[in-house]
Amino acid sequence: MTRLGILISGRGSNFEAIADNVASGAIPAEIAVVLSNRAAAPGLDAARRRGLPAVCIPSKGLDREVYDRMVVEELRRRGVDLVCLAGFMRLLSAAFIRAFPNRILNIHPSLLPAFPGLDAQRQALEHGVRLAGCTVHFVDENLDSGPILIQTAVPVLDADTVETLSARILEQEHRIYSEALRIVIAGNYRIEGRRVVFKEAVSHQPSAIG
Ligand code: GAR
Image (cartoon, rainbow, N blue to C red; front, side):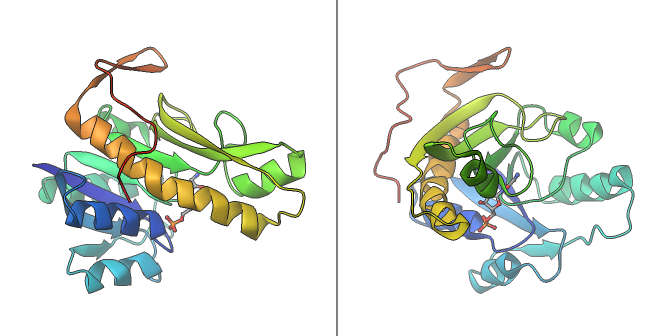
């Protein structure tokens, strides 16, 4: 059974959506650890309430290489074989990425490569795009980069605020992260350069996943 390591920095709603789908059996995996770089992350409490292993490794003041080594050690100790960044607001070092080749996923609240980095929803609103959305991608050494697994678009409405647009995107984030996990766990894909090619007719359209 695939063992997931979920990395968070805050609220943890994407983690909770994944946890719901693991609990229902829709994602054939187990959550080996939920790890945060911030002790105050509400997602850590949510993990504890669910009876899942929840660990904080504070990143404050630590050199990136040193910090990442500690995280990789913890993930290895827990037998993690697939890493999910779920609102983990840190760039990963090359050593971290090499430790889990093509086994680290991230979700970002924009249609990449548009609007990488912080405040993607605000960036989209201020740019005046008509379509916003979210992306699940493999992680490489660059910010919000790496081969794309799934994207979904949502409309931007004239009356939108950052909050209303973020909420519309978040609903889709919760759906597509689980879809992406199902695809990666099934292994029905290959990576060709920047492209993720599905080997069989794997649908990345909306499914029964909640
Ligand atoms: C999500 O919107 C996620 O896409 C974003 O942070 C939020 C975390 O929410 N991630 C990034 O911006 C990464 N560049 P959550 O803690 O409720 O899952």
